[in-house]
Length: 263
Image (cartoon, rainbow, N blue to C red; front, side, top):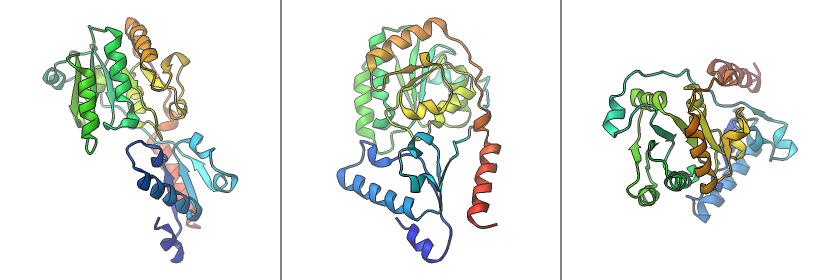
């Protein structure tokens, strides 16, 4: 919204576009209109625009695309943890749990995941949801009610070795999001060689996954069936993540900044 003030000072502006926030359910009508208004101003005044989602970039008219570039997020090298003390603390065993990581917000689709897990009848693997609720406490309570007495564990915010333990020892990773800009947590799971199940949305097609790893967005019954199939053949997977190397990403962004600055 304030980028025109920079233009008045002849300061070049590079906008990074992650996702259209006005599509998220958590916002009211006034907030959505304000976000959409701000987006229009920012897109118009920016000298260059970085989209982390190329499908999002393709939605905009030619004048916006001509000054835009797709640069995905990077993922740092995994820190495999031999420790299991945090797992013991939350009551899970290595390779005996399904993992999902993210902020507890409606667009992340945790309700779909919990419904699918409860319907699947899986008893030998627990479900671990790692992430904080912040302002979405009502949604968190809704999720806990959905889980009932089933083996669903909410860890809250986790960082460092605790998060590394969760990734290192998980049996399967699930991303059930209804809306994403670029799913960094999916890249993290892939860097730990985890087999994955992901909702079929444009953002999850930014990475190279086989069709069997997808399920229809917000379809708990389809996800339930996929969960049962996946846990019959748990495996580690080698992914090509060279496109998401942070050194490469930093170099491309740096080149763009120099270009916009006229150097």
